[in-house]
Every structure is written in structure tokens, then in C-alpha cells.
Amino acid sequence: EVQLVQSGAEVKKPGESLKISCKGSGYSFTSYWIGWVRQMPGKGLEWMGIIYPGDSDTRYSPSFQGQVTISADKSISTAYLQWSSLKASDTAMYYCARRWKHYPSYFDYWGQGTLVTVSS
Amino acid sequence: EIVMTQSPATLSVSPGERATLSCRASQSVSSNLAWYQQKPGQAPRLLIYGASTRATGIPARFSGSGSGTEFTLTISSLQSEDFAVYYCQQYNNWPQVTFGQGTRLEIK
Image (tube, rainbow over all chains, first blue to last red; front, side, top):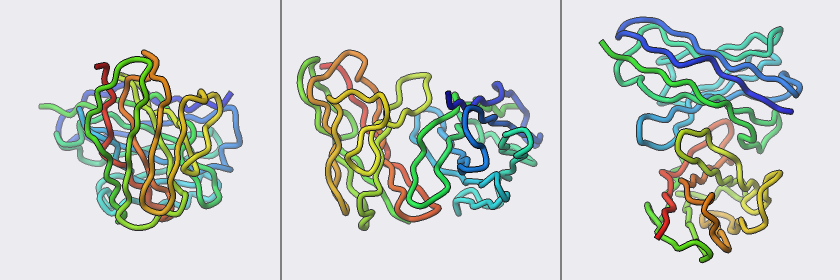
């Protein structure tokens, strides 16, 4: 069974750093891209970026370039999303989702989401 | 960036009736269009890909159509579990994907 299991909810203060994770199982982790999607409270879905764990090829949405860092450790089938200095506006639910390595491809399985709350 | 526009923002339909949701792309995305369902407190779930192919386990009452810039998701006979928010997404413009703003399907 394909599963993407994300790390738990986080409460942070502005200016703090954070790294959340997404662990894949039940499939070949290096045959799929892992993407990250933001959903701010009461809002829609925004694509942030994507990584290919096979070679760590990473692409970012222009809206998120420089704001976050996406990485992966294929040895433990885990992808990461990190911030060096959080802002209150980073408060959101963050989802990881997998995407087949060949074009064209869509997100077929999603993690359960990680809620990040940034508040002083 | 390809902009996806969904209509209506909210759709009120009675159980057992048909629901028709629309999605328009600002430029052609061929058939590289997916639909997702999101219920409160849950992650999105893939319903349709390739504009018209149902994902594994999706009931036959869900159908998708269209190509180019105009797409439709139809739910033929609404069940109580179908009331949710629906998003379209284009994946034609690698690696970018863009989502529509969502249509909230509510019980009339």
C-alpha cells in the first residue's frame, strides 16, 4: 500500500527555523517526484516545489523560490521542506504528494498534511 | 503561469441530483487536467486524471470531460459523501502545476 506519512503539527515563533518531513512507503521512492503544496487557512492549494529523490533534482515555484528549501534523503525514503526564518504568513497546512517521474504526471497520492502555526 | 478558473465558487445541489463543475485554463493544457476532492480536515484525493480517466477506486458517478481550455466534472447522482470542495489542476506546463481556486459543493 502506497503511503506518504508526514511529521506532526508544529507551533513556532517568528524567526525560528523548521524542517518538516514526508516519508514514503509501499513504492519505489526514487521513481517518483515528491511535491509540496501549501494550503493557507480557508484557502486553496498552491504548488511550492518538487524534488526527484533519485538525484535530488529540485524545482521551485517562482512564488516560493528563496523562501523555502526542499530536500530528500533517498536512503530513508524521506523528503523535507524547511524554512530558515518563519513568518506569521507561513501559517498553513502543508501537504506532500507524489508524482510519476515521466511527463505528464499528476499527484496521485498525498500525505495527511502537517499543520504549521507561526505565532508570537 | 497558466491560470485555472473554476465556476461556480459554490454550488448547491440536492442529494440524488446531478452536479456540473467547470474549470477553464488561460491557455491550452491539452488533456493534462486532474480533479481532486477535499473534505474538511482531509488531504485532497485524486478523482480524475487525463481530463476523463477515473483514478483507482473512484465511483462511476464521477466523470470528467473536456480538452484544451474547457473542462467539466460531473457527478451524476450526488451522495451525501460527495459534498466537499473540488479542485482542478493543470499539469501540462512541467514542472509547474496550478490549481483552480476550488468549487464548494454543498447540500441544498
